[in-house]
Amino acid sequence: MKEISLVLSGGGARGIAHIGVIKYLEANGYVIQNIAGTSMGAIVGAVYASGKLNEFEKFLMDLDAKTIIKLLDFSITRPGIIEGKKIIHKLKEFLTCEKIEDLQKNYLCIATDINNQKEILWNKGNLLTAIHSSFAIPFIFDPVIENKKILVDGGVVNNIPVNHVDRELLTIAVCANASVDINILPPEIINFKFQNNKNKKSTIKKYLNNFIGKKKDNSMPGYYEILDSTLHIMIEQNSMNILKRYPPDYLIKIPRKIAGTFDFLKAKQLIRAGEYLAKVTMNS
Image 1 (cartoon, helix red, strand yellow):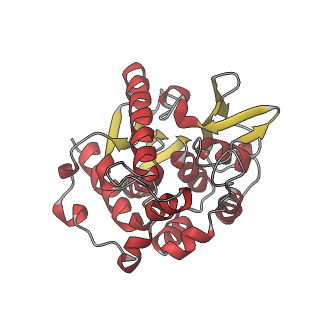
Image 2: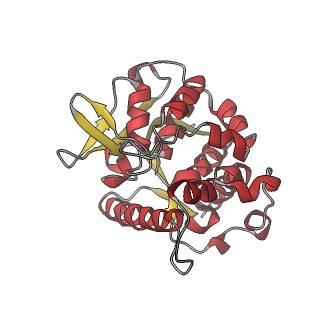
Image 3: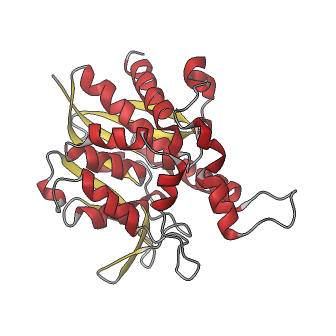
């Protein structure tokens, strides 16, 4: 039995690869005692700590573009273009308790207090509020108001919270937005035809661009492209700084180019990538 602390970064849909990493680790005798996450890592970590990862995996594998759009409560009159309440309501199905301290595993996640410009560590309290604040990407999702604090995505301050887990155990971190060559993956994963291929053109990317408004100048990138690139730069710099200060025992890197931030239709491909890269990393 190999007890570990597992740290899961943000990275949007790329964070689905965390599921594959967890599947590989459990299948190979690793026992996750502590789990920490930011943004999508906070979601996957909470679902795992609730004992509902298999159900969540099935939900993601069955997603199509129509289902995704139904989960997005769009608005042009709020601080974010998506309120996020429908997503939170859906996540309730995969969480077995209301409070973090009642989870089956030691769990924490990170949010950002924008008023006080500091990190908020959630290791107790309301689980849904913690998760919601951790994935509230600025401008995309409404911030979460909690105890007069305005909370947004934890990736703004700490995208991969290695510094908050028990380092006496073997520490494994997963960076789901890494600037590594996608060719570290085998061709069968890179070129994988994902399940809902017929809906490929109806992705969140297209919907976001259309919701904000069509471009007048086709030579300029659309809303989605600017957002995705900006998020990548912010998250990568954040992650690099944290990892330099607090290097984990193992770092599993998921290539950024395997998927976009909102490419949730690629669940099967991402899970396979997570399993493969966990195997390669842990046996290197």
